[in-house]
Image (cartoon, rainbow, N blue to C red; front, side, top):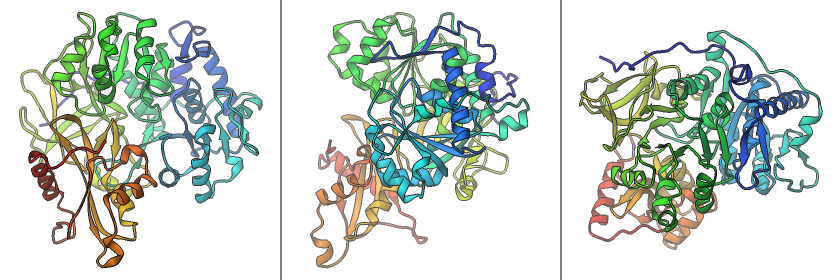
Length: 549
């Protein structure tokens, strides 16, 4: 058997920009994107359409060819989505990078996405310029995103120059095959193993995500949102860049999450819907501010994804909201264009479930040998297939062979089961190696590769560990020093600093470093991380291991 969706619906076949801008069903002059920090900065649908057409002309005049990838290196901003849509409309492909990335990480991102053009905020430009030099991207292919009136570094060009060429229409089409085969974005995920990978997201993927998550789940009220999750990431990109303009749902844009500003904005503007990740939920619950005022009492719906949330914490957060307002969990991945399971409004859940399959999405469960073991109440690796599922990882034959079977099923790496009486899905474990840190994905192989580049380290393994006192994962390294005097002076502090100098802070070894004589491997050389997890568990239970925050 396979798990069928409760309903199926026909999907549009047009290009993404026609889908968004042709005949929007709302006042096209009302502000849609609003800057939380400066509400006088806003963009309406009409303004967005004009800016997008101008940017399309500017990008083409600057040499953008169909299929070229453009990287945006920026925090959230009301103009971020405008750039995204212009890149796609010009026939290009959008990719976004984490603003905290080091040059080392940006080089990998640029190479994996095959980015040809770069756009960066001035405050974080130096790291990107360093990466551009290492990847042979010429200076004329770099623009400064001076979105808040910042000064332009000498010799650099503002993105606003792209608005001065004129205006041109976007690439239009209206066939299912073209929509399914035309790439709109390369969003990054660690997949089930290995370094971060560029996930191909098509026009059809993004249209299906809106239609099946929001279009199939209408609300009896006008939706407004606060967007504080990074919009370069798949957890926010579809809502920020597509759904906001498609449905006319007002989006209050935060450059980055700030607790007090977040709560005040939700209350001041009567924000209806909250899309959250566990770190934001925890931050609100732990703050005395949440007890001072009923900031969230007028929120109509909240949903949490990106990582599992304890149902006790879920209940505590739900108590801060108004009577009758649901707070539920969703499940999805970059590879499913974001949400794949959810609860329809206004259903409640207090069981820790991630909901039911969205329309048109099929699922099955497999065992460790890949056999179909689908049945209600049975645990297995969740596999999904449908219009929101990526056609594959870009330029990565090995990852595609590992992650897709011969019938087109994507193997998620998550262990799940479906309750037979309610059809609710539960994520209970994870086969893949990924470590979730504050909602971000940390891939152990990436950390291991950096550790192994240290001249005093001959072997290394990284696992994620948890502590009873903390609802989070912590990266922990097991390190083998180089024999003799050359390795004996290596300390934990030295290892930590070496990693921090090369990777983002959220990838720090907050679970500590343990020096060992050897790391267990199987006959083929594969790291036996199960042994390391058992070692860490024993140390935690004995009180010998504490998180290094």
